[in-house]
Amino acid sequence: MREWTTKHSIEHEFTASYTSPLNGVAEHRIGVLLEGTRAALFDSGLPPSWWGHATTSVAYVQNIFPNASGNIPEELWTGQHQNVSHLIPFGSISFVHIPEKSGQKKLDPRGFKAQMVVYVVKEWGSNAVYHTSDVVWEKLNGHWVSEVKGEDEDLEFLTLKTLDDTNSNPNQTAAKYN
Image 1 (tube, rainbow, N blue to C red):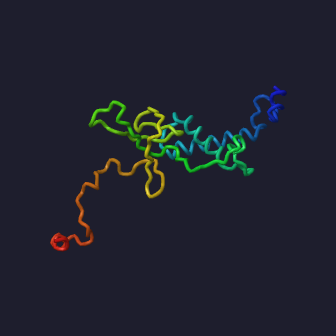
Image 2 (cartoon, helix red, strand yellow):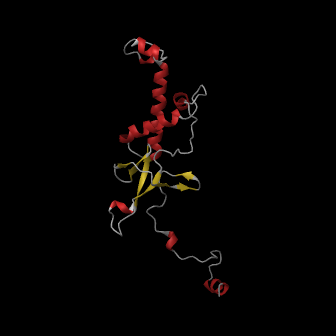
């Protein structure tokens, strides 16, 4: 073991059995991952059974942002500059496209609502997980959303509205456009 760790420039430190407080660095990292996992699950509204996906997402994000010493772990491992423009918050709402070639009938749905869980999507209302790249992410005023507001409300866009909502006198409105 010592030869292997020395060959790979790893400093192997031993601690006494059952004394995890002596391994402060590792315990701190585990605590940070746990706090991030708890926050991701709370924010997404997903149950604790999705802890593995949330932890993977938190670890991924931590590895592409600078750590306390100012280094970006992924850049140190790969030697490549990291781009964070692809990041999507854990639990964000998406709509997944179902291709026509999938055997769907003419009037069958062409998509379904889903949530992002570690760069795969979880179908809304089930535990089915899909690997796909044909996804549209829901944003509201430039911010990611983790739940669609008013999804159970009537479809307001089907309501006929006049161009001048401030004057609700129908005679004035009709005369203006005749």
